[in-house]
Image (cartoon, rainbow, N blue to C red; front, side, top):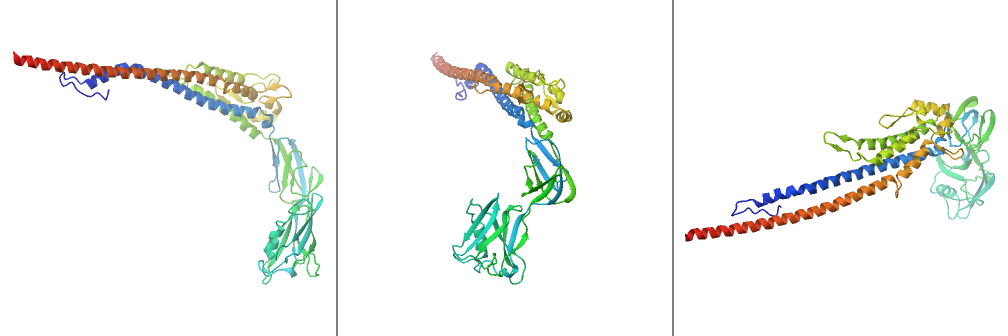
Length: 469
């Protein structure tokens, strides 16, 4: 159309505009096809969004159907400045009294005596090339002997580095951590500090031999070691039973629970450790599934409306597939689970109420009460309990969603494939129609060009005849 802009010099007709008007009349068919194609593309987009939301719900349902989601525990203590605690899923719920914390576990820490302090840490040779330092630390009941042989002259810094990288003979362990401290002495402030990497009374450091100028074994008569911190076990009671541990983190006294002692409060002081079901974490998982379900419902509802003003439905309007999905999911959400107690058979009884628009409202307080007062049946309402054979709501939803979203044969996939076929057909029909319009336009151009040529010829002959008359 735009390529034919010649006005009729003889006829005075603007052929370009005339052709454009004639083609635009024929264009309505193509425009109608494009509009329908756009509508179906919107359906595909709506289904893809729905598929994503269904996938989120499927994941949330799968998690909630797993018994471990409900078996999460938490540990609380009456004074976290004294101790802290955590519980695993297999912890036994109950109250435990931690009392009489008279000592905290600590690692043995020694240094060279005052007479063997050094004036520098990086110049004076402390352990000469070929000389040795040997020490023993007991680890898990086994004596770990470490022999350090200098491969060159070592300063205090060099000795520290060597200790921190030399392994024991038996099990290749680095049993000691060495550091340097400056004690502030005016002339000789530097000292070697050796700390056992094993806490508890059995993890002390024994110097077997020392050829260094520090004379840690006192073989020269002027050396030896000074204890900065003695090797010591933690001492406390659990429910009146005296306990001694090499570590302040204790995980083998209260089943499934670990607690860490922070302060030796002393005899006569007691603290309560409470292990209970973590209802907040459970409610979070239930809310995740509920929110995901509501997102699915809203996606379908919002795209299934009919606009009376525009006289046009949404992308999912009159889609039997989505209506079926809602019915299937709602049926599971509202149906009773057989085999459970009469007051915990449906979701509404634990605080999950279905609204008129199909969404679900979670009553946090009511759900929390049911989880506390009737934990076993409330859990069974959701999970896949293989021991009883009862499939809860979350398990049923997961199975249904797995079927709906199946990549090969799920109803979403099947419907999207059907829609895509329609789109492909419209694409083909639009191409056919556009080719027809192009041929029609070319035909009009040719016909009007012929007409104009004829009129020009007639006009010329008319003028010739007029001159002859």
